[in-house]
Amino acid sequence: MAQANEINFYSAPLDGLSDQIWRRYILREVPEWDWVFTPFFRLPSASLFSTKTLVAHIGSDIFEDQKLMDKTVLQILLGPHGPLEQQIQTINQMGIKRLNINLGCPGRKVVAHQGGAFWLKELPLLAEKLKIIRQNFQGHLSAKIRSGFDHLNLDETLNLLNQEKIDQVILHPRLSTQLYHGRANWALFQTAREIFPELVVNGDICTLKDLSNVSNYSSEIMIGRGAIANPWLPQEYLQQKEFSLLERRNQIHQFVSFFVSEMKKEKFPESTILQRIKALGHYFLEKWPDKKSKVLRSQNLSEALDYL
Ligand SMILES: Cc1cc2nc3c(=O)[nH]c(=O)nc-3n(C[C@H](O)[C@H](O)[C@H](O)COP(=O)(O)O)c2cc1C
Image (cartoon, rainbow, N blue to C red):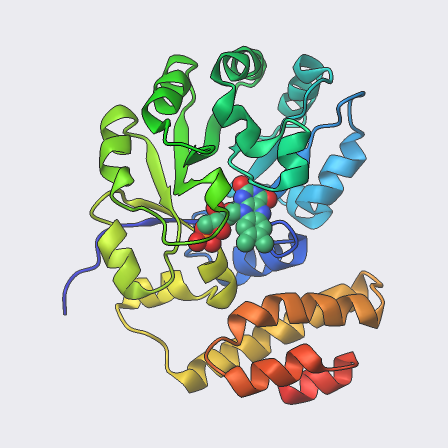
């Protein structure tokens, strides 16, 4: 059997999907994930934030467990104003060792509030923000980008990130205006890594075949929707074989029972638990279309759990 290339697995920030309970599951149960990103934490535009709010965003169980924190990367979303220097100093003082800046979110509201991919079209202004962040954060600093806002300006962006001493870049090679349409343009990884060698590749990587293709560009691989669909993909990669449908079903049952019992412990109402299972099930039930449509149409939690 062919030997698998060494890969470092990054689970992507996914607002509304990779919440603290989902991250806790993969941190504990699938240790093959090397780095686990929080969804974006929006830095307020008029004030500092309360550290309690940030701990809740990361997940207090994760924050209090150094082993889990060692693999956790906090992602922030910049805004137009706000005391950035003080905000970053606070993050630094909280002992957070890995920070990621979201420069790729294409959401209309996010961009209108000068967040995410907005910065890809305002590189001189971005440089000022990056200087403040770099001066005030001592740990590992990465940026997550797309290949441009409405046109390709990847080289300029990467040169700027180099110049501002960003340690690592995660590239999702679509334009912001493309949203999630079309295919991620993996060919851009080749030129990107020539300018910025510390490159993490991301976008439409879901299967063992995808992993083997993109590992030609980088050994650092970030997976988003594919990680929700199959949190066990890094294990499959290491064993160089897909788990059988029966094995996958057992893993899903184990995951769902963990997820539901953690949500119940945290006193979430059943309607919220149902919503969360539907949001995740949309991805992890892709191999079972009938089951998926029944779960997504379920009126209450026990009905959804019965279909699983
Ligand atoms: C529902 C959803 C939420 C997302 N939330 C974030 C986010 O909070 N921060 C971020 O940088 N990217 C976010 N993304 C983008 C993903 O991290 C990733 O870059 C993108 O989905 C492409 O990778 P994939 O094809 O492996 O999913 C989100 C994507 C989706 C579909």
